[in-house]
Amino acid sequence: MEQKREFQLTSTEKLGILEIVISGKVTVKTAGTVQQEVFALLSAMKIKRLIVDVRTLKGRLGLADAYFRVREYPAEAPRVKTAVVDIEENSEFQSFHETAACNVGLLLRWFTDMDDARAWVASSPD
Image (cartoon, rainbow, N blue to C red; front, side, top):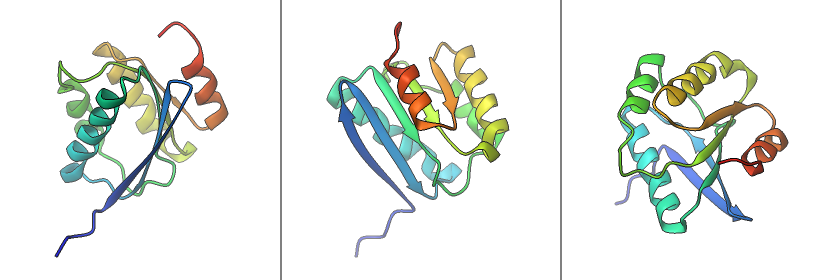
């Protein structure tokens, strides 16, 4: 019997931008699986711009877990311009995540408005 996953990923692609909605619940235990599934989509589609919508996601990694997840970003994983859309209540976490990503050379910004995220991701340079 197949066990129901705690999280779901849905994706759409339009004009070279991949939008992924992550819903359900992500824990320290499942965060690596989520990350690998996102990498697989990016690699298969050869996408260079990404929007990740986590507004309905339940739970977040702690600051230390987020830091180590960013620090351990695989060298072979796609490097893409990434916008994360989240709710205002998570701004402290997302600000930390944005800074940690920048410190390891990842181009990531956090937004609360999907239209702002789309405009930034679509803008140049990559």
